[in-house]
Length: 166
Image 1 (tube, rainbow, N blue to C red):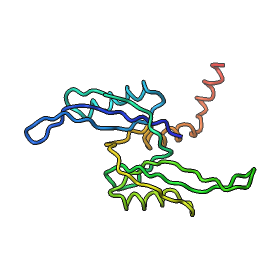
Image 2 (image 1 turned 90 degrees about the vertical axis):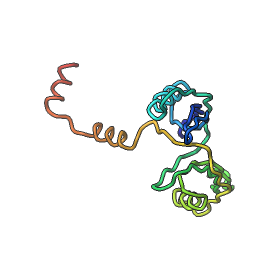
Image 3 (image 1 turned 60 degrees about the vertical axis):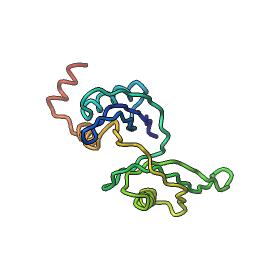
Image 4 (image 1 turned 180 degrees about the vertical axis):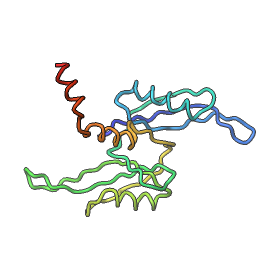
């Protein structure tokens, strides 16, 4: 399960010839509130010219985040499905809230049905959120690099050096 934080960022945004204060919500995958705040400061400094303030940080409760290709808005989809309890043999309804990137509500519905491939999946509600962007803890490229590095075979020189350091 992801540990997600919604950070509200307040800054002055230029509209035509006027500048208005706006507050926008950004979602960060982080381990703690402190890390979420640090990442928000780092990321927003590269996007926002001028001063900004992190107004609030709160934990977000999403079971999963789906970012298929296409889409420019974040939708919150409440879904439920039925599982069978192995001990008692009774049916149990599980509900969860997911976040999905889509272009409209119909697109969000189609994408959530495709992403969670369960026959008895019920989509109970889909709502557009005010989330502007999501910043994952690791990008897909970072994960691939970690996998490649951790699985590469050691050279003879590296093995000899490891033996000598013991």
